[in-house]
Image (cartoon, rainbow, N blue to C red; front, top):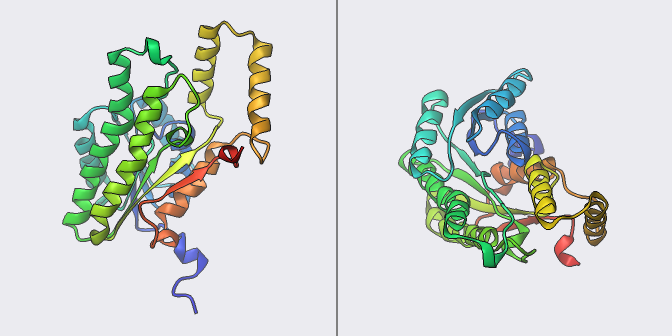
Length: 271
């Protein structure tokens, strides 16, 4: 007989989670799923107004959530966010490093400021949020789950995103390194590599790229259709596709998985 039922494996009641970049898109979907499973969730985002709106909507569903403005590119924000989570919920069991940016830019035109902004947000911030959370988990002698949002661009470049691709490649290796060190403390560290996901951020980036390239609406539509035809499942992903994977990795169902990167791309990399 199994030790735990399916319900028990995915039950997060009594757990506390911190999700970065959780106001919209993938981060919001993850906060939704984790809180639905019973976790108390601290929603952090640089956009405080949007984060407060998300928190209000989840509270209306009876969820236990808190909200905090935090800039993932700032090291000080990591300690502040962890401290605020402990003060509000009394613990920290799950960290989801979701905050990230992906401004399109040609390699030949990418300057130092843009390079630093992307790496600071996507990689440096992820490390220091993980460090701050792991210190709490280790000090309290408790197990923990850390989920990093990487990208299929960590495994295959798409073009005009060398800064982003480098940051996400770093996320994959940082995940392995941190999993190795934190394993003896029963802290699992894993990553998710999303493919093309329909989010507000992706739409804004596509619009910016389209404008910069001087593309017409019909050309953008054709590009989108061609992209979907490369996906074996023939659809673009939605935020909840990633949230379900995050819930799995944050749950007891994934207690013997660490250092892995789960690709969630509808099979795109196969093509």
